Image: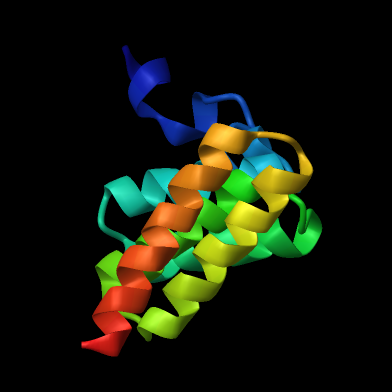
Length: 114
């Protein structure tokens, strides 16, 4: 039992950082997990790093759009993220995702206009 409770007995290299690696997908996974915990700033920071590592990940842009909107960031940031997601999805012929991102962008445009 002491082996389980004693951190010195645990295998090294099992931190979350070690498990996700230094990849865009890893930062996305950690960022999305942090958002579900309502750790907005940490989650957004991870998603922004993911996008720096791979700017063609539409699902990261989509998630950032949601996070910006839910966190109460400037709605223009959310709009830009959804528009970028729509453009990426369109270029990848993910038409349904592109339409969904365009719909979210139009909802934000309406909020900005009111």
